[in-house]
Length: 192
Image 1 (cartoon, rainbow, N blue to C red):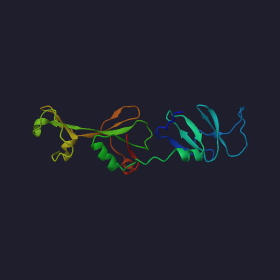
Image 2 (cartoon, helix red, strand yellow):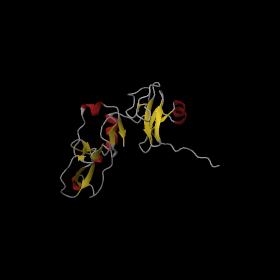
Image 3 (cartoon, rainbow, N blue to C red):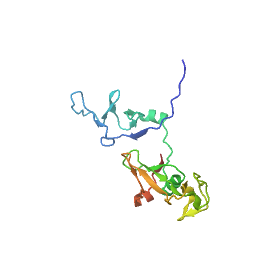
Image 4 (cartoon, helix red, strand yellow):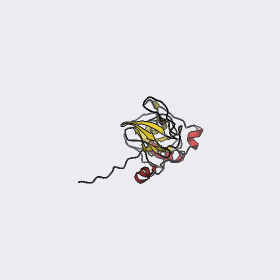
């Protein structure tokens, strides 16, 4: 018989000990809906039907968003905690300046992120060819901002300084996003 290896997949999981630990675990009840007094068990509805949840079980959100319980020994043999990818605002800002997108794990909206909208200047201003892109870290600046954060515009283009934009949960773009004090002090920034 051929053998197979499980694909590496990141999941979300939390350990359950009592009612109230996970919003999807309900009191254990019989088929008539009568709550059973058989100990500290819970009940979770899965794609395969309902399952009893025992104290110490892990509640896993699978790759399709489905929830299911897993015994602690099976969980320990199958999963390792993912290394944290969280970072400070200054580290996140460096990624944005390099052309990446970042978001806070603490933001409520799904799909939100911030990114750099490069500035523009007339190419003849500093002797560039039309359409050229200054390299990151270029020593010249406009209003103190490195030319690496600009694109060369056509002759006569107005100087437009770079700014940070945000994609909101609805998909709308917020031009000129400003970080709150909490955003600047947070340590939960992640690359998206």
